[in-house]
Length: 330
Length: 306
Image (cartoon, rainbow over all chains, first blue to last red; front, side, top):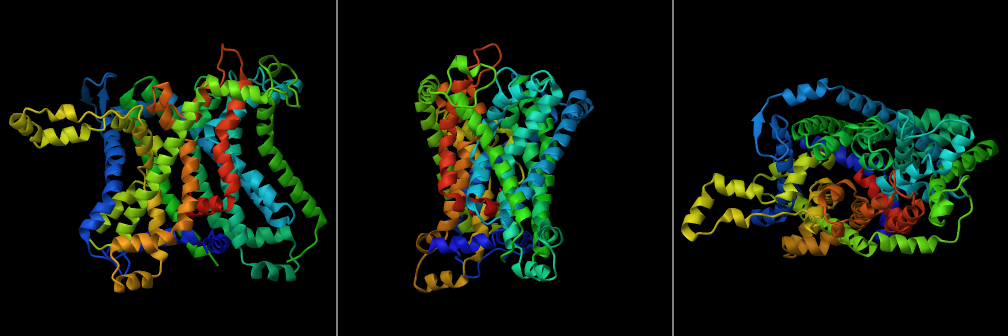
């Protein structure tokens, strides 16, 4: 009966897996060799080694060795043909951090990520609240709002690039007919707005799924009690549901920031290619540009290392977010 | 909890309709653009009513972009990612939760650490790793002096044998994308919730680990496997950065790359009608999967937190 299984899990979906993840982390802390091991287990080390081998080998070749290489490349200068390597210590980093290009890119990435995360979560919250409240047509609304998840970031970028294309795009024509200037190929601010719109459009569905599930998991007894006390729906949302789902929101903030930082390559590449004049050059796009287009491997590796540190930081935050979920759950 | 609040109900429907419209509008305009001719797509104002050339455009986009080949590539790569990642993670998670062996925690941490770095931040070194997958082995052989030994004994140059260039190969497109432990972690979490009695009973009945895995654990994990396959399918089909770097040969490109190639750039004819028609058949497989399997997809997404 896999079907009934799923439905029961759907109800508590928000609570279950994150709790499991959070517990896993706390379970890991006492570092005994027993943790995370079933009481009834097998003792056949060779079979275990065989089962683990594919995963570990793939990680070794495509994760650990590349990561180690990125680290070591960050401290050397290589000429583009890879003939010579000279150890330069932290020079790649200091030159990078001093470069106005990099500072501009970092600054844009920061505010782009922040604006994108805020708008996405706010809109998703509005839709989730409305979905929770309406009865008729809930399923249809859900299906439609979920659609962009199926669409690749780069296709989302292509769609919006077309809509706002200054020559043929219908939306651009609409803006022009209002007498306003619009040209994302020349005006940096227009390009930045367009990138933000495309990322938000692509990512609302993700936050929406989590928020709808979280609102479903708010205990009905609490809402009934508040209703008996005379609280209207909006008030119930702000005084009961919202505080109870803050852990989900916190988790989503982390995930949105990660999305903005690392997963918008396709959108940027399709909409603006980092332009005009580097106005939409995010840090990840810059790694690609400097490394593959301009073949500045040392600088690109140093950028990778900085991004790795940021990524590790956010993974830790993500797990903290999952842990906090446990404490708040009713 | 039945409650009548007409104003709020209307407001909520309005919000949702607006949201649905915001989702559909770009898709609708893409459809309109995809149904026009090259002349019509350039007119101002842009028409609201679709033209009659949608299927013509689809056909010419399909042929122009060589999509028979690209679609096939995308399917191979996507299915490779789904099956590869699922099978590797299932057995790794099984080993880590159901076996006692030396360095168990070390193995777990090695896998766990890989959750921390998304592929995007290690693009270039991974590119090198894929371009020359034999390099670490060559290094190992020469560092341990084995290569010299083999050469003197058999006259065989091991360096020459260890040249694997994975660029423009399905392996190069698939393997780096399954080098992350998210699925392993997910299955580990699930295995930890499986009742202990099942394994005890299986062992009392004389079942070994292999039999236990195939007869009990796998059937139990069906729901998780289904949910995760959907997420992985979308992930694989929608890849852009990897295939962009790893394929220099057009016949090894994926459907997404083919679409990107059709998008008009400055100084070319603005053939948006062809590009938009192509966007529809490139979006089709993931869209169908999401619509048909929505419930599983939601579960998979919320479970994996990704």
